[in-house]
Length: 488
Ligand SMILES: Cc1cc2nc3c(=O)[nH]c(=O)nc-3n(C[C@H](O)[C@H](O)[C@H](O)COP(=O)(O)OP(=O)(O)OC[C@H]3O[C@@H](n4cnc5c(N)ncnc54)[C@H](O)[C@@H]3O)c2cc1C
Image: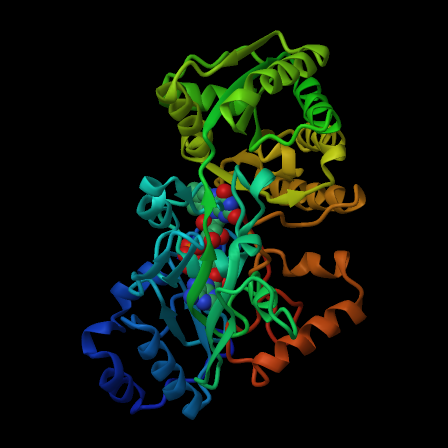
């Protein structure tokens, strides 16, 4: 285990002797992973700061097998952690006091596609992008588009209520999930919501979306499809300062324009991205905005003109429009793969995920700049500016102990600044284990108690993904050192 990473086997009892045999009877021996070497694959997700392998990974092939596995675990009171593709960025799949990991990545069937009613029923292990690929010939798409959409699964998206660049206009996962099938920690299976839009009773689907695996395991989801826009205009606005670019973000929204996406990259990120993808990005710019407009072709040109005018008013020195699909794709490649490109800049980096009201984007950017100066750190910014969802990337070298401490302090200060500006400590990556300590900054003890009571309705014994989201006296997962981390 790398220096600074935390072990998480604390609180675990040894597995009952006959468990392996009983689980093998359900899923087959080849769907169980228990060798120490193979288990290393599962010791962390995209949040690599804390690590710990489970004792056993189960890879069921169907929703029915998931339920049967959970029933076997329930009989022995064994805790479990759900896992999809493991791209999560807040340590949600870390097996803290949960010896068994149930991985839904083999549940890969898109079970039904109803083009006329724009509905899809997908199993939990279906990869996000597969859905759009299945329906795009019919002019439809699945709107939530996390940058990890080529790898992350619907089960993980539902658990994290994931967002993406185009969720500014189209909404996050919760706006596109009509129903889920949930295996409760007892092994009972409940159908929540469904293909019909409005249902009487509590919105339990809404409750499950974003519950980070603490209510049980999602095995199927009914998803809403959206009509693909007729046309796009993708603009790249170039600014001398990040301050001017963030003022332009507020200006665009204040003008009543809701772009499909409104993303920002600052100079540090531009340099990394240009070195990786050679898109002709301006290396001397303070920041660029990537603004995507979509809809009926006839309305886009005047809208693009309006955006151009707002950007010019806020000091844009150039506004470029992607000439064709190839140029649009290249700009999006730069944006969606920016985090990979950042690996060129420093031995390590650590990504923060916070959110502020979008009118406060200029303030949070100033706060990040001041934090970077105060702690003598390089911080790059690439974020969903239109949503106020920031992803400052703090560069460092983990061999420099003093710098590591400054990175941790900077991360805390940035999140505290988000809260002070009326925002929150996560825009889309969830709480997991990473941000448990910040929860009391956002919520009162009464708020937290209310939420843990709701959790207890689904999982009274606390066996589904224990010790996640909420501060918990029993297990303290403490962050000692940030590590290299890919993110949004
Ligand atoms: C390069 C990169 C870019 C990213 N970009 C974005 C982005 O733009 N927007 C964004 O929101 N996120 C982004 N992420 C984060 C991540 O991809 C999302 O959180 C994603 O939804 C996780 O899906 P997964 O299948 O990998 O889930 P995992 O990482 O396996 O699990 C995530 C959480 O969901 C729970 N879980 C998984 N499957 C189930 C299930 N079937 N039932 C119940 N609980 C379950 C797990 O217990 C865990 O708590 C990015 C990550 C990377 C590495």
